[in-house]
Image (cartoon, rainbow, N blue to C red; front, side, top):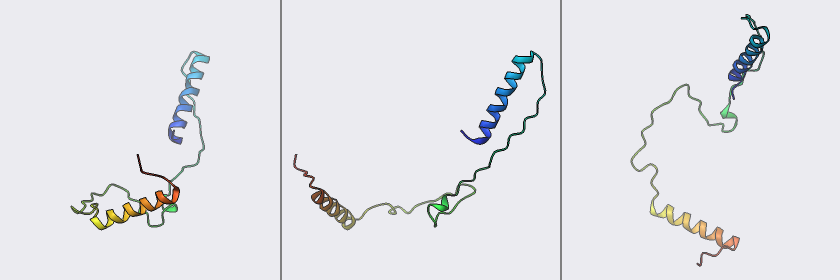
Length: 91
């Protein structure tokens, strides 16, 4: 729950309690101090670029396609890792 929403909820609860206690309308000013948090994702990935609004990106037709050599290399690496871990693929 965001800090802003928490403040509003607390205000509504306090106002409700005052109304139930006095059975009349009371005008109350409540001041709440809370830190304003700003997320900084670039701390986790230095090359991360923060955007103020979405940008449209159109990928190339083959941008995320694997070629056969890459598929063979990944399959060989997976088989080697399975062999090293002692996992058998015989069913």
